[in-house]
Amino acid sequence: MATGDFHLHSTASDGVHSPSWVVERAAANGVRVLALTDHDTTDGLAEAAGMAARLGLRLIPGVEISTEVGKADVHLLGYGFDPAGRRLQEFFRWQREGRLARVEKIVAILRDHGMPLETSRIFEIAGEATVGRPHVARALLEKGYVSSVQEAFDRWLGNGKPADVNREKLDPKDAIEIIHDHGGVVFVAHPIYIGDNYVDVVRHLKDLGANGIETYYKHYPPETVAFHAGLAAELDMAKSGGSDYHGLGNPDDRDIGDIPFADRDVDAFVRFIEANCRCSAVEG
Ligand code: AMP
Ligand code: ZN
Ligand code: FE
Ligand code: FE
Image (cartoon, rainbow, N blue to C red):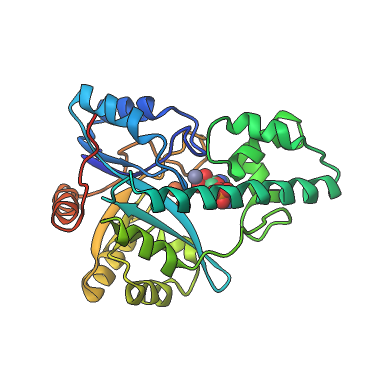
């Protein structure tokens, strides 16, 4: 188990468990420092920070933002920014509105494929959270159109599948700029998911100002970690790691902290945040 995990989701976006639960689980697994990185929202941070303070863990401000380069989905992780920034919160709100419009489009496609869903039910499943494809997957499961969340992705919602609708394109440049403007740094999430050309895309992101690479990620084998570490060194970028825990129980999911994230790299990440960010811990 790693002592740090910097890619975690909660019910503030599309995770299954509350921010407090995520922090408690992290502590139980031996994690001492973590970042909650919900999609397009920092709404879970206050609750997470309260639990982190109670359990003696350190919480670094975090968020995950979806952008596009060409046809490729590029997810960015922001850390260490000032969550109170008004312009930052407006930006997140605008991103969340784009997600609402996307759900309407996904529902229309599924209806055309003989699977009517109530949009209102999907929003109900999402609750206060940033709505995403996992909520649609749960609605499909509930109606019996699929027999698991994974099947919903494999047949309908996954990248390139019939009901995979992209949101209005967000240029990574804009996401990087707003995080930087608020005193934070930006890491490229799960680079392999970007596609076969990901090394070129990472170079491009570095040119746009990205600060680091998510070097350790749930199931990455040692050779992948070594390759990412080499790329980070070559491009003079920092290294991070995270489980991308959602609590969904998909086959290749990992528990919180269950990533082969070397202690010295956990410590180096924390020092990097302290040296370069305006807000290196959320007070509980
Ligand atoms: P969204 O933010 O709506 O694009 O949804 C992204 C989330 O959907 C990811 O964080 C994963 O939890 C989940 N997801 C995306 N693709 C897949 C897939 N092929 N299989 C299972 N889950 C997926
Ligand atoms: Zn997610
Ligand atoms: Fe992601
Ligand atoms: Fe994620």
